[in-house]
Length: 254
Image 1 (tube, rainbow, N blue to C red):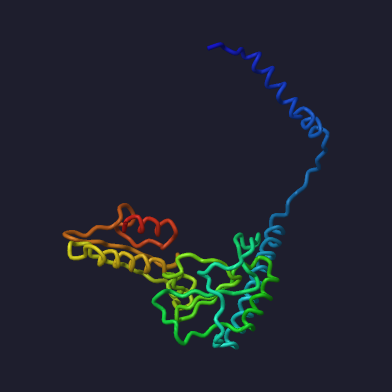
Image 2 (cartoon, rainbow, N blue to C red):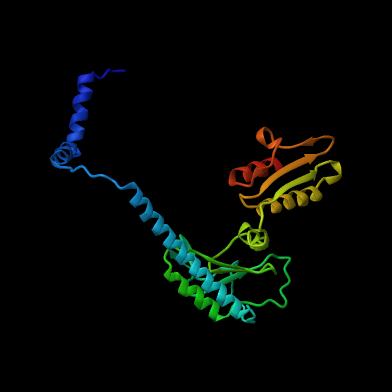
């Protein structure tokens, strides 16, 4: 294999730098003059905090507007909106980073929820949701009912609709619990639990895990002829239900 001398390689690299305009850019950079400025850190922090606080106030006002519309409407309309689980005409939307319809809201409900005596939002609720689009940093708006019915705006195509139950999601549970919870699940994995029984029990544990927030602490113990749990720090203490610990528990259960 032929060898390339250091001098030759250096020369060729210089030619490449010149060909892409490096020398010109360096020359222009050298002409620039800079003035020393002092940064007022306290003032900048206050300005940033003010902007963030302003955004939070706008979102809070939008939520209050939607809450008032829902309470006034009572969600008693018999007119069924479009199903979030069915294909509709959706347009790509940069703001929501997916395909949506800003003209409609949609609904979904788990397969075990009764289809009878369901009430839906009227056009007044939809109008309140549309007006909230003026808050540019507000994304999707949700309504979750104690019946298990789920409303989403703007309408978009959802997956796993048959099993999605908003009552088991952290955003719903956080409104019904006032203090952090410590939860330990004990799962029997002995021979008596073979087949569907064990699969159903495992799914139940995962459902419980999904209802928890990072303020809640969680632990899992499985047993047959002896008890087992996760290794490391999980062995002797409960841990916050973060995305990392959730994944650890899910891998352990599978």
